[in-house]
Image 1: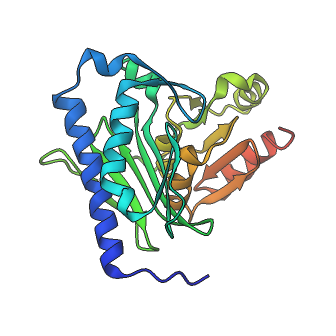
Image 2: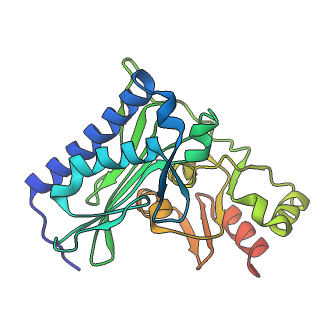
Length: 250
C-alpha cells in the first residue's frame, strides 16, 4: 500500500517525538517529586493502576503529538478519531520498575495508518538513548546526554530476554534444560527494541499494541514469530528456530 506523506510531516513528526522524549527524560532526572510516584485515582485504559508520572508523561506526549494524529495511549485510551494517522503510545514502559527504582524503563511511540506501522520510537529513559526507525529509513539513535556515544555490544551473545517469564514456568523449565540463559527485566518495549543485543527476546502473555508496535517496526529485519500470546524475535535463525520449537505448544 502506497501511503503518501509529505517530507514536512515526516520531519516534523520525528522532531516532535524526539522533543517529547527529551523533555520527559530531563524532567525525570531534574524535577521528579515524590508525588509523581504516587498512584492517581485513575485506572489506565490497559487496566493497570496509574502513577501520577504516567499521566504526566502521557500529557507531555499528547502536547507534542496530537496535531499529527489520533492519540491511542495506555492510560487514556483513544483520543479523537478524525485524523489520517494513529499514534500508539506507552508513555512509561516499565512503570513498576520506575516506581521501585529499578533502572529499566522507557517510552514507546508508533505511527500507524490503515494498520500499517510507519515509524517506531523506543526511548530508554535511564540511558537517555532514543532508538527509532521512521518511514523505511535506517535505524537511528538520539542521545540526550552530552558526550554520550553508542555503547559497544559483544557479538558473543550470552543471554536472552523472556518478558513475563513468571507466568510461564513450563517454558522457563524447557529453556533451562536447553541451557539457555535468560533475564526478565520488566519493560517489554525496551527488551524487544534491543533484540539485536540478545540471544533472543521472548514475550508471552497479554499482548497489547502499546507494548510491541514500535519495537516490532524497529526490528522488522530480524526473525519474528507472533501469535495471540507470544512474540519471539531473534537475529540468529538457528536460535530462532530452537526457541520456536520450545514454545510451539503454548
